[in-house]
Length: 335
Ligand code: NAD
Ligand code: UD1
Image 1 (cartoon, helix red, strand yellow):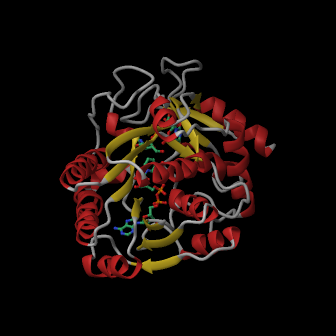
Image 2 (cartoon, rainbow, N blue to C red):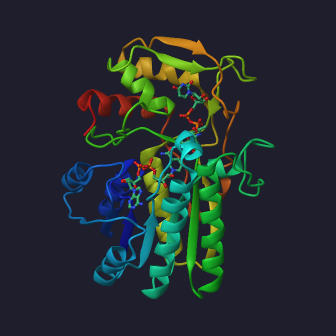
């Protein structure tokens, strides 16, 4: 299929584009490079030995994005573009509403105008807010606790309404849990700007000597070892989930929200141990206060993804640690 990928130069986008090229889809990436560089796609092309069309622009720029629709005539859109830092979203909520919500509105408007009826959207487990029960399934109440999470929730609702108004349309809302890891080649991976907010890129930078130690945010949670427990999902499995979602959307109608996780969880200390085993290096850490807004445990019920998409995570915590380390050691300063 002809797949227009917004934000395709970013972390999850680049791994997904690689997967789509390997599955012989035709891809146009539309990205403003606000949090990525064209280098990721140059490497993706090398790895896949296939070409990707690339257009630079903001998703809110209707003229530029419309030109890409007119030129490429996509059959489906995979929509990654947007801002994603929880802390920043509390400081700059209007930026988040503009880029995420207004950007998605512009995208849907152009899809309607150009007769494109299928979309796969990057949502997040953050839409659930504090878990009322675990594992979380898709019918759990949606009560996000920060502006970033609310943009994801609002976009989900907007896409649902859009889909109901467009006969024959199909929308898949993928709610990712905690994506980590890198392509096995070590050529593409997560390259955060500044100090990483998330655990795994932070550990990787400690291992490679860019930061002195990890701060563990709380060891007094009600978990196996007191540290936070999460459902980490390998980015390669996540990329395969997008391929499965596209295949599903090609032959289905309606709007479905689907968790993308493993159904298993690991604590911060277990992730540190996995990284030490993969890298052969000691990860110094300090226990500090809990981070505001953090919860003790988050685990997906991943049953719907298997039932509807025929998709299931395959890779382990050891794979996540090994591929992250391979990426970090080969690219100590990122791209
Ligand atoms: P990323 O920042 O690496 O990728 C996002 C890409 O979108 C970047 O290439 C960026 O340059 C581009 N972009 C941002 N705003 C844009 C705009 N207005 N117009 C055009 N391009 C724009 O992030 P990622 O980790 O690959 O995440 C991709 C998507 O998945 C995001 O929507 C994010 O909210 C969602 N998500 C990510 C995670 C995670 O942990 N990484 C978890 C859940 C959901
Ligand atoms: C964060 C986001 C969430 C987003 C998800 C995607 C917050 C509050 N939530 O989730 O919206 O969907 O990323 O990946 O930012 N930790 C440390 N030290 C660190 C970093 C993290 O101990 O330096 C701990 C955290 O307390 C948590 C675990 O590691 O227990 C995972 O943290 P992180 O990678 O930031 O992910 P989440 O907080 O689960």
